[in-house]
Image 1 (cartoon, one colour):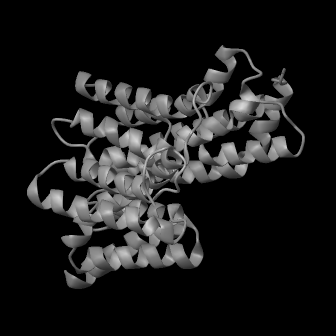
Image 2 (image 1 turned 120 degrees about the vertical axis):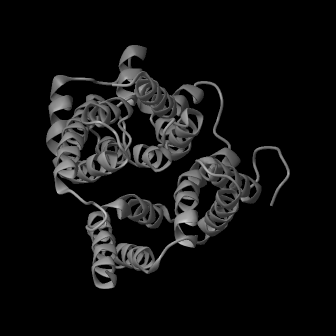
Length: 235
Length: 99
C-alpha cells in the first residue's frame, strides 16, 4: 500500500493548523514564564521546548525540578504524561505503514493531540497525504519554541512574581489539564488513587516521589478496573 | 548550559520520542489490549492529580481560592487559558487583600 507524502500536503497542514498554532503560542508563553520561575535559563527553556515538544510533560517536569535535578523522576514524569501518545501513534499505524520507515518515524516525532485529531479528520475526508501531519506539526513546533522564548523573557522582567500570583501558574495549569483530561466517572478511581497516594508520599518524603507514587497507584487502579480481554483476571 | 540540565533535557527528549513512536512500532507485532489501553488512558490525569494533591492539602486561602476559580472557570468556560489566568488572578487578589 502506498500513501502520498507531498509538499502540497505539507503546506496544507501548515495552513490548516494555524488556530492550533495560536493556542500553542499562548500556552508556550505560560510555559516560558513557568520555566523562568523554576530557575531555568532562557537557553535551557528554549532547548527543552525544541527537543521535548510536549507541553504538559514539560510543565510536570518543572513541577519536580530542583537542585540537584531528580533525573529519574523527571524522565518518568515525561513518560507518564506522554503515555497517551502511545495510543495516538498506534492509531496511525494503518496510515503511515505505507511510507518509508525514515519518513514514518520522523513524522511521529512531530505528532501532538491537536494535529493528530485534525489529520485523522483530513484522512476520513479522503485526503490521505501523510505530509499533513508534518506540516501541522512543524507549525505548532515553531509556535511552541518561539513562545517559550518570549514567555521566559517576559517572566524575567515582571519582578516579584509572587505578588502577581505567578508561582500559581503551574498548579493552575495542572488543575485545568485535569479537567480537560476528565472523561467522566471512570476517571474518578485513578484520580482519587493518584491523589491519595501522592498526598501520603509527599507527607512521608520530600522530593518528587509523590508524583511517581500517584502514577503507579492511578495506573494500577485503571488496570484492575479495565474491561477484560487481555487474558488476566479482573472485573 | 549546565551538563546536568542538558542531560535532563536529552533524557526528556528521548522519553517523549519513545512515547510518540513506541505505540506505532509496537502495533507492528502486538495488539494493544483493553487493559493496556485503560492504563495509558488513565495515567496522564493521575499525574495531574498527584501533582495537585500535596499543593491542595497545604494550600492557604489564596491558593485554595485560585484552585476553586481555575477548576470552576474550566468547567464553565471550557477555555484553558481563561481558566489559568482566572486562577492566577484570584491568588494575586487574595494575597493583595490579605497583605
